[in-house]
Image 1 (tube, rainbow, N blue to C red):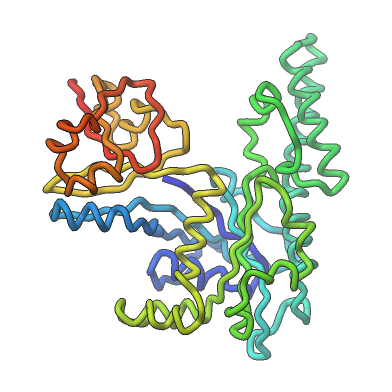
Image 2 (image 1 turned 180 degrees about the vertical axis):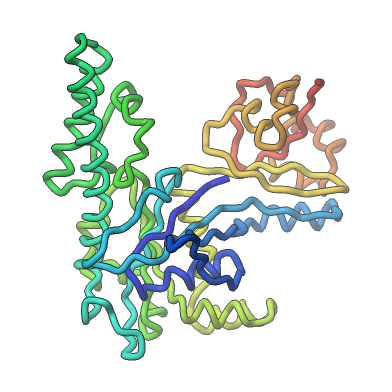
Length: 360
């Protein structure tokens, strides 16, 4: 399951976004004086799964999911962000305030997306700088006992990271080869994680979301391959969430939008990380499963159950378009040569409908 960590200054809409994404209404827990992260599970919108469910009429219809966590309690410039909870996140979602509301005062006194973006980036880089300096000190101590080529290579890469951080450059901007990246896998540097910036717009700007980045002056800061932006208006999303399903489309159409901001946030997260979905279908259940692009058939089987991966024999694969064109009939797909038997090293494609053959 894809895991995302919600970050941002206070009163930006993080908690609102979390509750909307996970359809929950739950307060922050505190244990022993320490604020515990709020965790929610968001369903990934995929019209293809809805079509498959109509064809197979299963007892259960299960979309893919994304785990989202928010660590409350960060007080802005006068406190430090406890980032340890986000080390295991696949990506970070930074909620950046652009809405204006005199009843919701900004902690800095005024709305300034460039300043707020820089402050949060600085927090992530300071946390990474502390990690890199501690590791370099340990390497120096270890090398006093004897030189090691492996440690020397690790120190070279980490020192490169430290230099970038000291220059104010997040690690996601570095270009490292595969060997250098191996040295960093155990550190989970936060500024190296893919970043999705969620611009929480004012209601007056929701009809013109495409120009939000330029209006905020964020073009340069939000450039790069490992960063994406999604403009939404959390206040309007709350209104949409309270509407009956038939009324949502009409409401969005009145605003000039084709889909909800929540759906765009989830889809952007998938695109940012290179995730895809494959499907399993039947009378009992139609389910979407999310995996990184390039995942092998055997590893995809393991997403369902470790026994299926362990006893993997073959994957029976039919493309979504072919199966739906044949009315959900695997028999018709076989007659037309649209069903393939693939081995464990087959790279699962987005939209594959798979039946795994296995024996344990």
